[in-house]
Image (cartoon, rainbow, N blue to C red; front, side, top):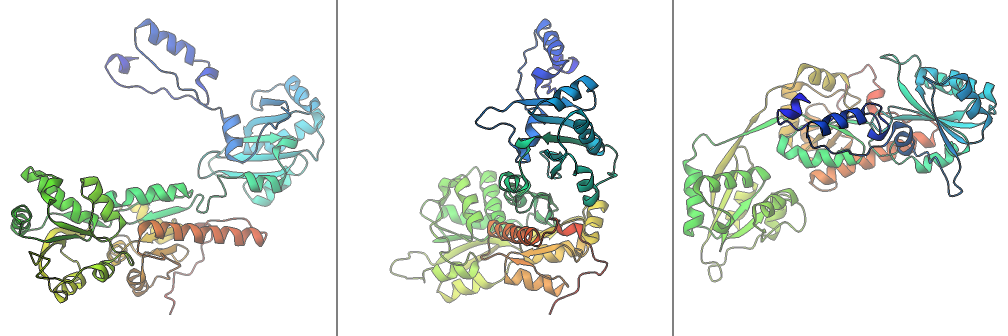
Length: 464
């Protein structure tokens, strides 16, 4: 209330639906009494939300009865009522108490062969569900080696009854835990800006991305060359401008803003972009590229489509190429060979970022990550330089052959390679790898485990 009176925006989070929270009404009345406006956002109780995430429908088209029981506060009368009924029962309990609760239901009248599912850490990427019967759940949990659990009591939701789903039905309905990278800790060694969309895609596959910047982008030491080039854009010095990265677009855009310019300054100039991410950054700037590689999304692919200089049709023979200080000469040499003059301008510098926190470095070297995505050779060199070599259980995914070669030179085995040099195709390739790995485990009758859950003592050896 003090924060609200002070002009702050306050969120009061409750477990489940505010309508079921004993204190919510009093808090709303207090706000109303002081003239503080408020909103109520309906929520979903754990007893309903967790089974939905576990692929366990509570009702069918026949409208079967569903009862909810909190085992932590239920008395003998409540146990006897649900035990005597044939309704689906959703029990809020703890993992440590599930076996005792199952025995209580059998004592109250439920048959030992009544199906049930037990879910812990529901709706999170740590979620795990077991399917058994009231009579076999104790044995199932012992076989899974989850008891006693680390960190004390673990809240659990148990669904008891025929609607708790047979194992084969839950396999088809378990949409959350069956995601290809479910629970995988994936290291994304890129700059924060570049990692955002990649991390979002990884989350859609069920992964938990950790962004560790390995490269910091800084202005050029001598900005005069960049300033002259930008002024040349306005005065008609160039026929083309070629962007090879999102950072190049950002560098030119910042220089435009410094001079009070906008996308209209590109009028009359042809614009080329290497790769979909760079093209997207240009569109966000208000510029639609005239040329994007039709094949390989790289400098070589761009050269395949770049037209040779023609003095009849091209009034100007000069190309402005803003790029990093460590960029390769492939594009420059190719453009010169096509007859163009190139102003090869350092638009930004890439420097090695500061080392990540100690716990992150230990996770990298100790096998705490399930996978790492390398999007360039520099990310390989810089990650190893600032944090050490990934553990041998970590899945190594590379964006292309050059990056894979650098990884192998650093003693890493490359497990996944993108079919084309795109960060999104790289994420897709890792998801396909995870899906195949999961399917193989299920077919072999083994528990589905993340790579980090299998840690051999040997360090990763380079594979010839």
